[in-house]
Image 1 (cartoon, rainbow, N blue to C red):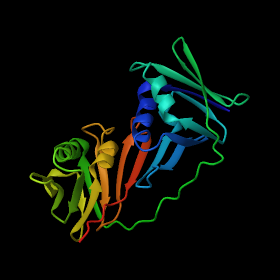
Image 2 (tube, rainbow, N blue to C red; image 1 turned 180 degrees about the horizontal axis):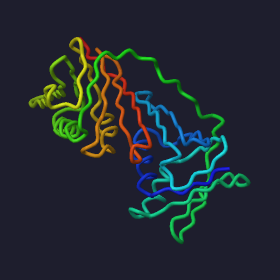
Image 3 (cartoon, rainbow, N blue to C red; image 1 turned 30 degrees about the vertical axis):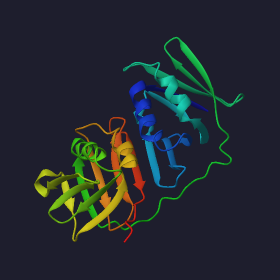
Length: 245
């Protein structure tokens, strides 16, 4: 059994953080909420998402897995407006998700989850931590996109920095400790990342919301933030680009 009612913006938020990385996802559902973990097809990035049942207006569920085509779900949700309530019901007989928005009813076929993996979250020791407003990160990413396809993230005990270098131009965003929500770093750490991936991960976060960044030297970066009115939590891992000598 799975029956839920949710505000459209909460469901759209789930789509926004998931669909840039993966098209087909396995939702693990129980009475406490919804959980998913997935790796993008290129094995460059991972998402770990938890949505508490309290993010929903109504939520009743048994333990189950639902395989969802995020493109289909996104297309349906484009028909909703802000503030709309969306009803979700699982039809076990036909293995379909029944989505109701006002007078509109869409029965969406689900994907067989048998072949969908359960990736493990790597246990990484990332020694630097910075908590930053999403608006600041977005500014650095947008400026960097104009000059390069990769972006260096640098953290030391005094500053957080984003640096991009193209054939002729460079972009540098440096934030001192007093401009950050939090900064913890005993040393100097730097890793290089794809701007496309980084941009897709940051884009869904609202400007005033905090993003927690964990960083090491040539290690994956971990990004964390809340969604669904702080009743959902997103973790992203993004593999580094290793610079050739």
